[in-house]
Length: 472
Image (cartoon, rainbow, N blue to C red; front, top):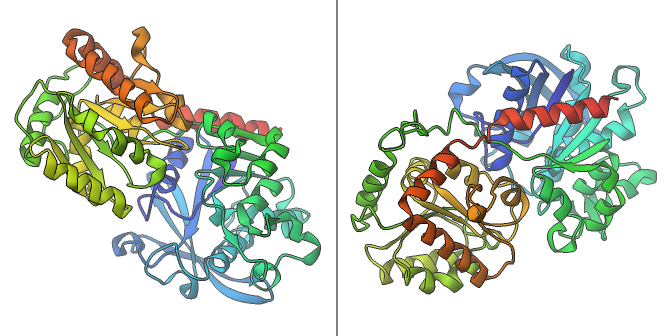
């Protein structure tokens, strides 16, 4: 079985979020299970030079972009056993930043055509084109329109994974023929709600659509979660499913992580207390080993549930707790947490920006990890928190619901609440704090968290089952 994983970003080359993590980990896990998975992505200017130096030129070709043709170079590199292809065009990709340009629709239309055009030239004929988010959503559209009937391309299957339905690739209808090259008789494939919607085109044309958790696959059929795509998704629900993401358990490993203060494991968890003490010292928190430390590592945007934290902050700080948050985003949230830091010196710290090594130290040093998200397609932070023995307190949405089970019955790995309400969040947090006071029971819960399996192996096996189902 051969898979071409089409993505706009992938670690270790370049990443802005969860898609880059997935594209850097899932293909490796598939290769380890003897699946011939290769990755294709744009050759961005911002890819570090030492990684560019490892690439070798494969071929060049001319790619149709609507009525014109553009040069395309194809480069290749290997990382951890996976072959990566890089689509080169300096006009489209020799820029700072990978998204947010005025002509992103044209840039990724070019990329999508280039992916299909290069296949006969690179000696790789995939059985499945696995596409991701709106940036590669035109691959199944173009395959359906221009390639599926050609001898080389016949019987290939297309799968599109939606990582966050909020981002759909929406543009004005004026780009249909002149930029995207969609024939007039086929414009209905990508037209939706009065505009061009690239993700809608992928939903229409792909053989299957997946999301990054089973619960999210059901949630996006509801208007509250779908950002207006629920109508077309309900019509195509017969080809929709969800597979929970994993994390790189070698990268996130408290036993070997060089960014934390002291190594520990499920078998020898004692040094977690050292990480807490050192984190308190670094952040200027009171050196109190028995006071529960609540951590958050998050983008400061509405979807992350920070309005619930703001509503309940005073009541949270009435408890015997310390609180640390690391992140950046909306000014409203940043300024609020700065003011809380001034109000609760030695008890609450707000760290602006994103500092990777500090995030690891927060995972390792905190006792509780708070994620009250309004919407969370999958979420990786709760899985990382488990890996470091920080007990998640989460809202039951998306991947949070699929990965965290309430420990109220003595068998879960965290604390959960269902309604998007600050009172419900506070109740779950108070239950967690009560559990913390039972030191013997808490040690059992931390050990259970450290032993949770959120590796990519489990997710890769589910993708393999889906691939086989598609090929049947």
